Amino acid sequence: MIFPFVAGDYLLYLANLTGVLIIGALGLNILTGFTGQISLGHAAFVGVGAYAAAVGATRFGLPFFLAIPMGGAVACAAGTVVGVPSLRVKGLYLAIATLAAQVIFEWIFSNWDSVTGGIRGINVPPASLFGVALNTDFRIYYLIFAMVAMFTYFARNLFRTRVGRAFIAIRDRDISAELMGINLFRYKILSFMVSSFYAGVAGGVWVYFTKVVTPEYFPLSLSIQFLAIIVVGGLGSIQGTIFGAIFMTLVPELLKAGTESARAVFPDAMSYLFPMRDILFGAMIVGFLVFEPHGLAEMWHRTKRYFALWPFKN
Image (tube, rainbow, N blue to C red; front, top):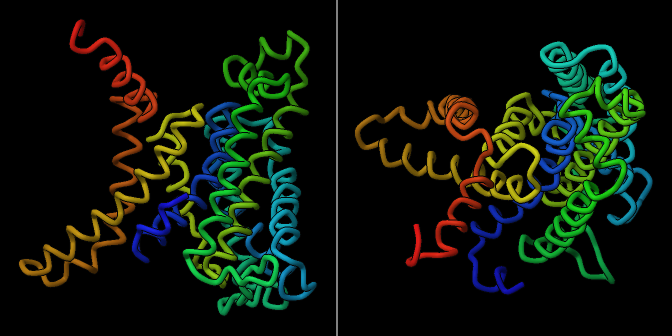
């Protein structure tokens, strides 16, 4: 609660960005980490939610507390359509199907000018609560982290329910789950719907954070970043998702600082920043899958176990 009062503008910006990524990554972890359905199109659903919220706010005059759920609902509908092939294909083939959705939605964002504004995008007025405009990083911080707390609470409790346990059963062994009476089609589609709703809400919050939405915000590299967050943080871990979002927000900043330092020796170092970032994300995905498949969450648990009895027993 006191963080905005002690942090500078740049730290507040990073904190707000991390909050948006946490909401979106929670959705992907529900789909991939808990249900075992791979998606390479998560950024597209974030984009659908962002554009839907922007349209709701600018053309229909909806307040933010209606525009953001509207973004989630439209993304949920899109996820339902994309999720239909999940009954017939899985693994690499499902990844390619979701990659196709990413490409299609990117094209729509850039070319459906009458709705999305094309490459110019849509400018969105700041959210307003009781007449107070949430037009600064300081003010929007509380909205973003209220959403983070609410959606984290929902995700944690989802897996104590029949629906959440069905997701886990499908991930562990879908044929056995079907023999136990779990309707694979229904629950796979439901997982896509929940995941896409999270992504859409993240997009809606993103719109009020940046106050503008353009196609360049939702490239394939953002989908890779979401995938890196849940792999690095820990597949099938809510806590790991939060760790992963924080870690993957700080890594590019450290890379940027290192690149700026290297300009004294390599004047063109900054031109390699974005390619290096993508390479680093890919390397971390591979590295964690090989050496620490349970991610930062497992490292955190091991550290806690180590210090639980320290120094009496190691």
